[in-house]
Image (cartoon, rainbow, N blue to C red; front, side):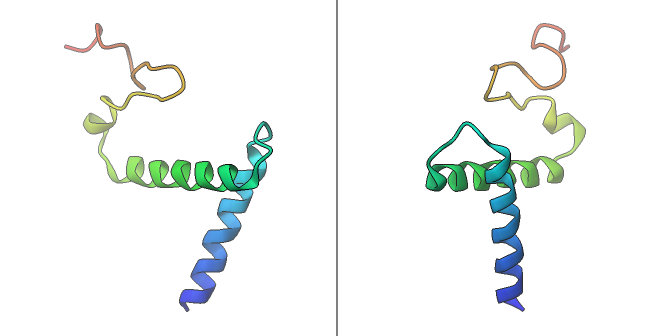
Length: 71
């Protein structure tokens, strides 16, 4: 059972790696893909109010609305 789960997990990570075309080194691509996958899982667990404070790593803005618009 756990072997199948590991294979499935590895396959999704591999898919995430292939999405990131700019990375040549496969190891860093795998690490990034795992990080992305973990972040997605954590975001799914959070509710809407918690998500509002998440800062996007790419452009350092909050996901929903700017900080100034929040009241």
